Amino acid sequence: MDELLRVRGLKTYYYSAKHVVPAVDGVSFSLRKGEVLGLVGESGSGKSTVARSVTRIFNKAYTRIEGGEILFHGRDLLKVPDRKMSDIRGRHIAMVFQNPQTSLNPVFSIGNQLAEALLLHQKMPRTLAREKAVELLRQVNIPSPELRMGDFPHQLSGGMQQRVMIAIALACRPEIIIADEPTTALDVTIQAQILDLFTRLRGEAGMSMLLITHNMGVVAEVCDRMMVMYGGVVMEEGRCAEIFDKPLHEYTKGLLACIPDLDEDKDTLYSIPGQAPRLEAPVTACRFSGRCGKAFGKCRGQEPPLFALGGGRAVRCWLYGGEEAAG
Image 1 (cartoon, rainbow, N blue to C red):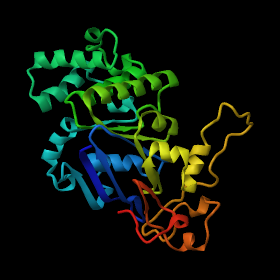
Image 2: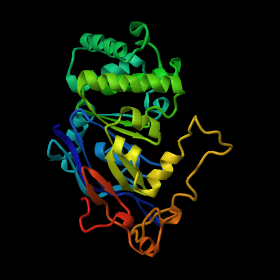
Image 3: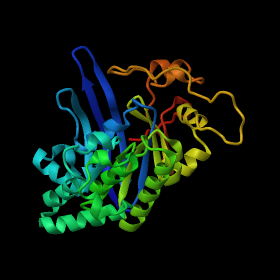
């Protein structure tokens, strides 16, 4: 598959009056045409910051990209002027945010918000943009799309609002969709419908997707590869089937152990002991060492690199240390 996106050594830091937080601290990955890459981890691991860094949607008052490259078709998006970046967003790289209630404008109708992307990026006549908007609503399984065009966001259920967000993202047929926790606020029935929609659209349109979630079941259902993030760095990466079959990092094992097993009768569900640390730059130890049952002296004194194990598999752990580290 052709490579569309390559991120190299991305560092995005948050700044306050007293602290510097390495929210994303040297993350690298690639995304190929037609591929779905899952980015998983607990809240605060840096997943959404990666997405906002790729699209450059963040508050510059306290957020800075301190290093790395974001190559889209070989062009570094970090060097693209803001006006040109606005053209890339929506037309070539689209984003579906976690909470549609705060992402949709409450004072504009669904039809106006859908048509806006078509008018802005496709330069369509208003009549044609409206026809295309109706077709997009039909594509994401919105019933009676012609009637829904005049509805406002508060008149739709959470699942329908999320489908409208997906329709807006699909409006210009982007090459990449970044979906940030697209099913978190939805019940399991609507979640299944959204995942089926993603799978169908991937097959029909050949789009690539970066799917950000903390739900390992969602990753198992729709993703080809996955990256496990913790404390702003990648702890493990590889093909989903391989990681689910044989996780290597203790953090990945913990995440998988948290998934309830319907065949087991338990009074208490497993949870990873301890809490995620409040990191400050620079980091001088393994970020997971305080919660890891296999941590030893070196883990607490030196942060491990991401060791390449071959076949696209990599893990950030001294137990798998070798001479070659993944870049």
